[in-house]
Image (cartoon, rainbow, N blue to C red; front, side):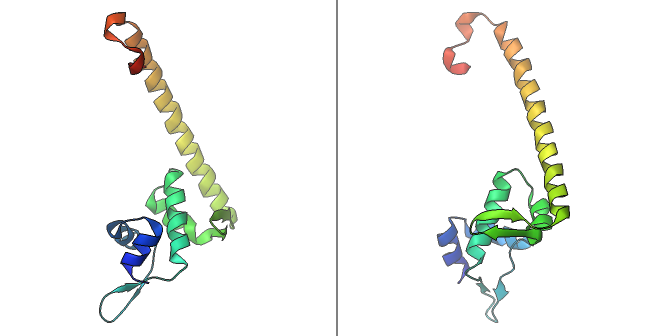
Length: 125
């Protein structure tokens, strides 16, 4: 299928599909005309990429872990021992970021609490 069809079937823009190709996440066949030709399985690959991005992984990390992942339909499965190590490391990184953001929110809440009530509405909190 051509890029427009893949974009339609996945809901991902053509520009983003080209970006995924540039990052090594997709490898369409190039026709002599220069057009990209995607396999039907690329629809699932794009879904996997989107899931991993939603999980907080960068495209560079996805490029490293995607070849080591299996799937049961749309559900990703960790197939390699080193993959689990990489995913645990990413999970720890995300947890640290969450802790940092929660601390920042708590600091802001403390500062906001010092404001006169007339300046803070329930919608602001």
